[in-house]
Length: 162
Image (cartoon, rainbow, N blue to C red; front, top):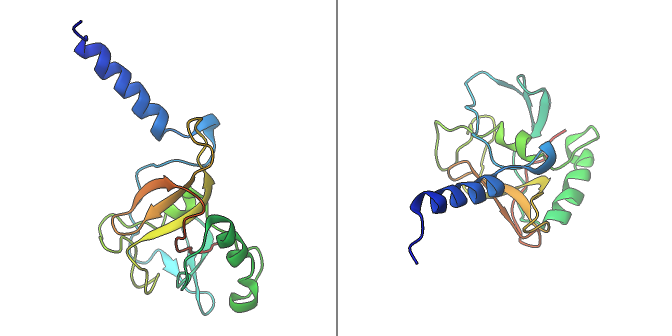
């Protein structure tokens, strides 16, 4: 039995679309990262970076330890004691991708604004929402700025936002 090559390509494209599209328009899933132009960030308080485009305040230096997904949320919630203010949390996938700088690699982030960022994985708060595996969570790899998903029991770095 000969397989129809066009039917096979069409089926593979449909699978790729399902695997890369967020379900129900939720805030998850990979999209093309934006550039981080010079002059976009200000420094309102020690240890923080304010993004004038997104109006988000970021933790300037990422966590020094790696956390499982649930523990990353606890870590961020406790930052008020060291960085001041309240409402610190793990960023959504879309928020985390706004600090990716595609003009840089390893790490693909503004090194002046976000000092000491390791070229590795950072959790987002966005769970995977497609049916094949609802127990995964999205992260960004700051080696090249790519978005992927993984088991939330794995330990990755986190950069908190408010």
